[in-house]
Image 1 (cartoon, rainbow, N blue to C red):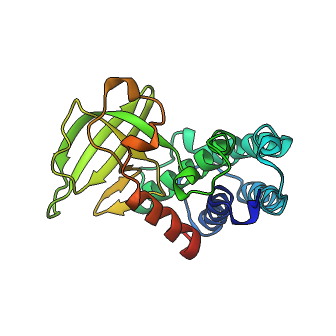
Image 2: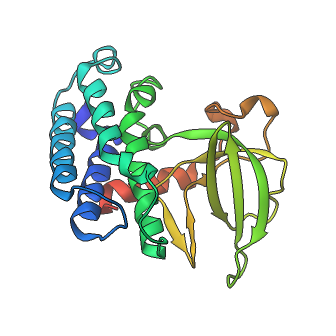
Length: 227
């Protein structure tokens, strides 16, 4: 397969570049060894580039040693955000922490996303998960935006949305996209379906029940313009 143009690989490349930029330029309130993290980033970038120009068939990619190494490396790259911060997180800190977690998710989940198939689709580059809406409130200071807290098992996401019909108790799908700051709230995902059945919680719904236009646009923008 043409791994050099695959959205999964291209987004992973952009994710590693964003991680390196955050580690290099940001002063996050954690006990970190900056040079060690940057060396992890360089190693991750090398692995992604090897994958990008491997042109391996799909069946050789999904269980490859390369993806196993990349997943283990991602754990080391992102483990520090599990620690207690040394001071309260600023808005910029919260966005950077969300980015670090998202980068880990992108790298660790490559194998599962390659299992979606050989077709090169933007939506294959990100996780799409059925979640239960736990609460919805207006985003203070905004016009027409709401903050939804959603869950899938032990995973919790904050979603800032302009959809006025999202209600607590609903099941919907979200795409876990690069985080964005809306006023003082970090949005970690985007709703990409109407109301779904309970059976979809915690798994990736089939394409027939998803609304993917905005997800595709977001992935294409991230790949073409960077993060």
